[in-house]
Length: 446
Ligand code: NDP
Ligand code: 2IT
Image (cartoon, rainbow, N blue to C red; front, side, top):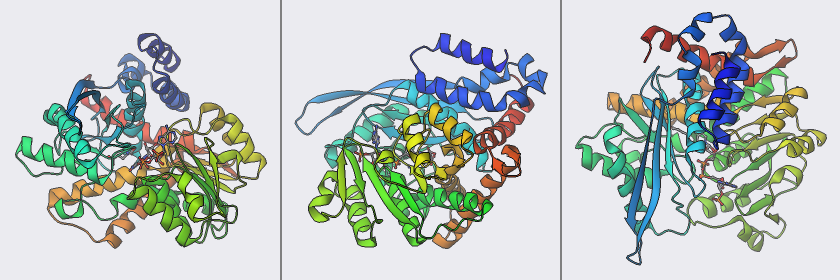
């Protein structure tokens, strides 16, 4: 089948999975030319095999809440591809989780992991369990019930989960603890672990910092200095917070952050003190951004709104969730003079928004390139675990910077359109694809 036939076939066979179709369509439209040059791909059904996950586990997770009631959620793990390394990718706990979302994330992860230059396949898992408002003990019991179902499918050389939305160090700790008890071995079967039991320094920071490093590489191609630039961020979780932290360190102005309730706008940029307050509120206290103006009345809170139309910015770094920046947001950003978008979240821009950015020839980095620093540092955690040693924060940070520069260089190599424009979407998709496709060709029909 040709690429457009594969897509049509997937839509028919897997209806009602819009996010999965969206992610596949974006990649297939970039690699069409490469596929046309290699007719053997079609003969061997390579594209179809690359788009459909190797396997999917779906299971019920029953657990007991603090009132003694039995609650049931769905749990999933999508093992997309292990062509170039063990399955690898995060776990998401959020009420919106369904198979379409996890299939899109596992598909994206396969190309992202390929781009990191490390040996990792692609996977994603999660549950429609929402950690919000749950006690520590409820979260622990849920994590244990989730891993009780999944642990046989995991392992340091088999499938290595990590965090994502709703899953941070606490949840990884509970899941890894239970995995270790069931498997009776202490290996790097999860990443994002605590430092005292095999976690890597810099893993919490890595996605946000990595996105900033990617942005710096992009800006350098046009000779632009980050100092004083106005950056709109969405989200106020792991990725958004460490993006903001690094940006402040680099002398940029963070003019917005958001959570699922609304956006905080700082027309002159957040001060270090205001940022630290937000960081602690969202990271340790389970707080809402709606509480921020009580402490800092000069910051505006806009309930139920995303930041993109609320404040002028030079650079946008969407870092909350998929499809959170649509075509009208893109138009507003461009009209305000935004010249760079670097995605911390996975697929935060809708296809219409992506077209706008590319048509306007701004610096636009898709998540699979810009946010790859998180999983790359997970790969570094796996390397440290298997050597049974740990590197300093400086060593990990230097490797992260090197990896982001390499990913940027690959995007430029495969995505250069002319002297003044690089299509980073095309570059990332082709570079990620070639390595996985070569491995699949060499390994026979599996
Ligand atoms: P967190 O759970 O730490 O934070 C998520 C943030 O986004 C929160 O502020 C949350 O708001 C907000 N958010 C989540 N879902 C929605 C929604 N449906 N609508 C509006 N706001 C929402 O997750 P991360 O920071 O880890 O992940 C953010 C994004 O980055 C995701 O797309 C993830 O896939 C991606 N990513 C994460 C990596 C990692 O290492 N953690 C690596 C690469 C990509 P609230 O506080 O109200 O819940
Ligand atoms: O989307 C992602 O890359 C992640 N959530 C991180 C995955 C990982 O295995 O570190």
